Length: 161
Image (cartoon, rainbow, N blue to C red):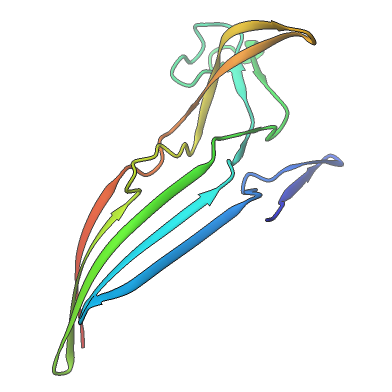
């Protein structure tokens, strides 16, 4: 558990790097002679971001906030929102064999094996609709993010002298 803040004009806000709850776990085992298998899991709370949007529909529709109309764009409270939680599992298999003074290794690794989206960089917001509640009217947002690392298989070969 940890908290990271920034101070701007005597006000305290969450830092962009603030991840209050983080869990990293790894397990590995030698399966047979030079063959090893491992799994790693990472889970963390979402990253803070500052919502930005445009009041005019024609302003920078690719990003969701007002590049062409700076007077029509708005930025909310610094880092007041958070992305969804980040979770990823990686698996790997490695084979190693010594041949005299040389060690040969080959591995196969699959990152983000479950293919989670894991939103990364904030890319703007667009209003979906206004919702009336007991406390008044609020806006429902569609927040856009760049996708995180996709499922990615990797193979490698290592020769150590």
